[in-house]
Length: 445
Image (tube, rainbow, N blue to C red):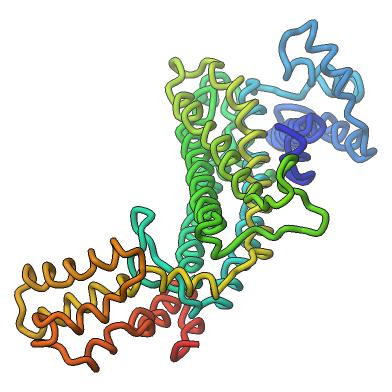
């Protein structure tokens, strides 16, 4: 975790004080349940909560000092709590194993992190929707292989991003549900020394579901799915970031990141306005995705448990969620402040002499009785002349002069084939699918 790419609310989830507070709540709720079952005295649970009600400061340094001797973090924590609470603390952790605390705590942390990420995604989706509606009918160049293809609208591009992030949000909701489980089942998950009712009680108090079957740990396929979902979200962030980076290239310049007063683009070249935020997002996406493979490799633990997953999760848990939180917030700001140049979009649309309308002519010729192969050859031979002339010639002029075309299509028919609004006839339908029927409208703005 790097402070430069961190936001306070997400960082706080992974702070040692937060982790120890969650550990205490798990232990105290478990002691409550054990007291109700008559396994430990009620006075033990009361003593824990009475101390906790004083809002004690958690002495991380003291716990770390104990761990330096015990070489065991949970024992160090229990020892420190016992020093604060007194003799009644001996009834904590009855029938439990360390992973009951560690894994349940990680579930709580990842669930809380998910809630922040879901709020981030809601903000991003709102920003994308606003800009998509703003540019619903702004003509823009659609490209395949980086080459001019057919016209789209800039709002259409953003609607694609909205639909993608909506899918990502749904995946994160599912991943949150999958990761938010509680295991208080003892040394190998058999409840040999603790009643399953304790697990159910702790799960309810901590806002988790009961893990149906655990070993000494919660199965790591859950965690693999969670981090894989974060990786997909990161890839979607990069996809939109790369699109914006391309659109800001000098040769394209259809949109660009907001360049604030006083901002500098280069230490050497005063004219530079670089897409630094979206380039940064590409890098952050790589960092989030780097957590996916280790999470997958954590699934195959030895027998009922080893600790090869532990060091991995201590790193990827904070790093992936903190980085993704920052990236989502940054992308939201980029979208909200994105500077769009409709005039430049139109200029680029017209740059290649009408080549972008070639498919319409091809289809019209086939409908007029020309074989598809011949129609393709007729349009292509004229299109290649325009291509080689770098826009100095107009495809429509060449087609009107081509006897194979004029024999089949009138000038008025050709004119109709070169209209932009032909390409936007179903924008309302697409927007209705993405945003709901209320997003529909009529006509081209």
